[in-house]
Length: 200
Image 1 (cartoon, helix red, strand yellow):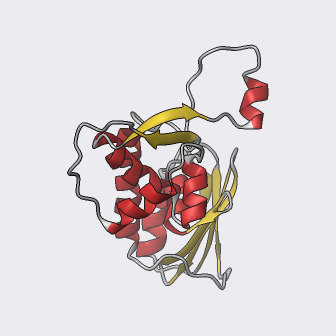
Image 2: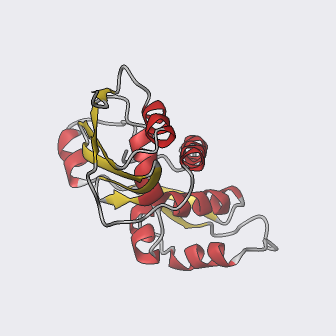
């Protein structure tokens, strides 16, 4: 019996558990309004995931938040790629943890199109920063979006947003503005306000 169905009837995490416990080899294909996603398994171990030009854990996070669409597991299909090296339970827990953190971060940084800038006169001047915080801080110029910073630094958008969230909370940085994409500008032409969501 083929492993396939609708994401409105089956939780994607349950599907992943079935593949893992059955120790299957093959590729799980998911089809949604965001396009096709793939997850490659070897002996039930998730070795690679890709969705919307992303791969690894970043892709997994997008996949497990997809609620509408269909899925189909193709046994025996092979991909010569490896971007994930952890048990499926850990993959799910890590992705879920990042999703929970995103919800908190979104209260301050609602989109990857947010531009941050330095606070002119921070209240606290004796803040100790680690190497990652210094790395991100050095790339801030008041013009680059979270998405652009991630690209320049070679980091995941989530990782950059998490660091920026800490720096904003500490009073060193502030949210300057949200840059609209060309597509959003056309869709919202003639409108005011609106809530900018991060890419999913």
